Length: 199
Length: 213
Image 1: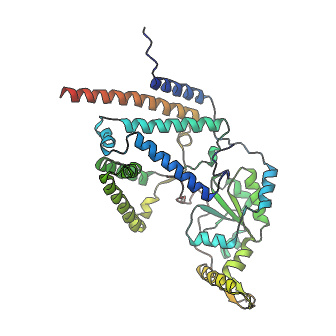
Image 2 (image 1 turned 30 degrees about the horizontal axis):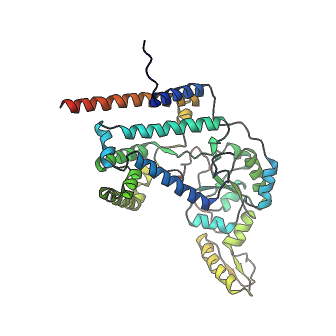
Image 3 (image 1 turned 135 degrees about the horizontal axis):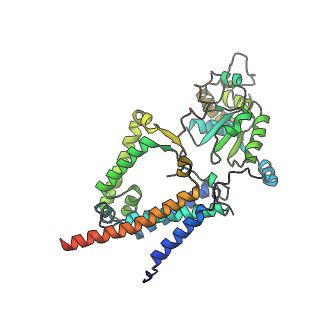
């Protein structure tokens, strides 16, 4: 059986919504179990006292990367059918900064705010309200922003293509970066805890 | 020297590094070589007629402003200049392979009648493109059904209701609906072509696609 299942017609448009629903439930469940329903936990990573978010996200990235790489290598996934979103360099840098500021200030990212809202946290509902308001404002201002929104288009590029590196090399590099990152994160957490204890 | 204890975390990290080193020699995961054609599968697709998009469906997609498909006009430059369906990009059949279509895109092909688009469909399918569709009946069907829809004099109420909708669609695309058994008159000229689309992929701004997160 070959993946991506949807592209190979294993299920149609309607069933794909059911599949998306189930995957969404699973995603929310694991975010909640990782402790990401708490703004305190999420914001703690910016104060370097708890880097769980970094570790969970990087674990997910590396697991998915290695999985996709090897499944595709075995011929079980057709990578050329997997959607790669287009890169718009400047607007995406700006968007990333805005999201980051919102994350530090509000304590949530969009997905975790839904998770926190589902567990009944009131701050999450304010965050969600702000998010919806932001979407509306963006939508209304879109004609003014359109030019910037589509500026510096680079198409659907991947790091191996862009840097002209072998795919496997990038996989190894990201793994080493992740493993190094985990070790570094654990060290930072210990150091911060020790400093807190001393103070 | 004391060996560090192998905790689950360290084990996972070690496994990852081993997989990464093996991956270094695993080669390119994209199977870029040409795919073999499963003729039986293709025949089944043709038989089930799931490779078609009707003119009415296409008109709906354009009216809804959907951008999740690419509309390819296979006709000559003169024909394209005199009229083409909005959003269509003109690509000669010989340039189709180098045009930069992605294998994960939904591609709708059309020509005057349908022969060229069927042939182009085959070429793309042989190259492993998945979502390739043909405009059923080609531009001829688009002209008859979308631009100049007709209503026979003895139409039922249901047909009349459908025609009401077709009239609106026709107006949207600058066409002229005709009522009664009236033939398409010579005066009902083709609407002017929509504003030109960029035809070279290098200069074309890639469209935002609604997929992914």
